[in-house]
Amino acid sequence: MAEIQQLGPDNWREFIESPGVAHLIIGKNDCVSCNAWDEELRAYLAGDHEFKNVRFGKIDLKTRGLIEFKRENPWIAELDTLPFNVIYKDGKRERDFAGLGIERLANRLKRVIGE
Image (cartoon, rainbow, N blue to C red; front, side, top):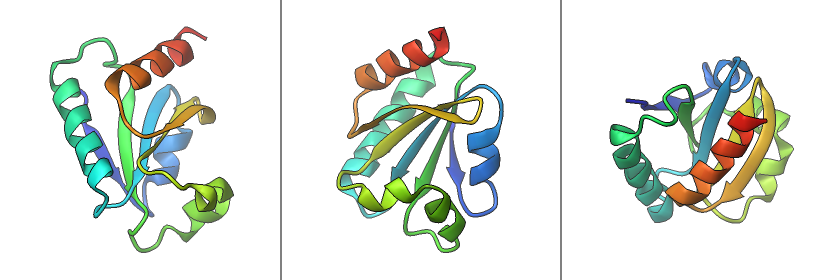
């Protein structure tokens, strides 16, 4: 079963840059939609076997010390919808989408994995 790793100033870069496919959720801990997406994704991952080689992580934008993350990803300042999802492959940003939805995520992961 895949788990969602909480990311912060000390581990976000390793998560994004490491080899393979990684799904990053960007949100805030007081965001109702972000918390709903977290619950939906955790429930899905508890029974999922299709994406066992994908790493899942999330960043709370209210976490102190994320200035480097925000500087290196200036597009974050333009986000107007949370949660925001980014799929990386071998450290490269491949796909992204705002909002939630297992089907939306699964479709994008399949495309990235198949590329």
